Image (cartoon, rainbow, N blue to C red):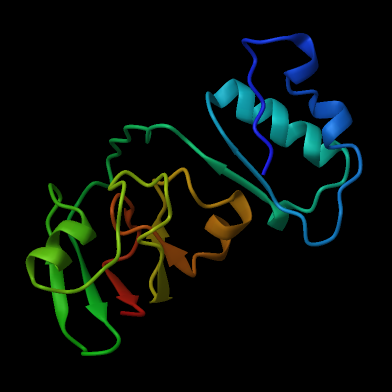
Length: 158
């Protein structure tokens, strides 16, 4: 683990070009901070050939999203077959935890990935900042704390 601060001597500042120039197999890059900083670091890593699967980011806060598709939908748990109605003003996580379903979670805003859940059927509407673009495109997992559904039903691996 290396930590770089930008308020000290020039020698301790983060030199993205130098530090990310030679990606190594099995080495993962984790970055958090303001969006501009994270974009700079991740863009530099990509330019130097870092595989997308080795790049990770965490935002300080989630982004507010209100879409016309904020309607109600249902989720069904694969383990029990039980279905739950998700109203437009509640998250999947809120409904499931209120019903006693054990779902691990932390941030409740789609930035940490603690609640990441496999989707077995249906198409999620991703509203998190945790998944990569390729993970979103696969539509086989979602964050029930903030994401919704594009289809009337999601079957979850819970």
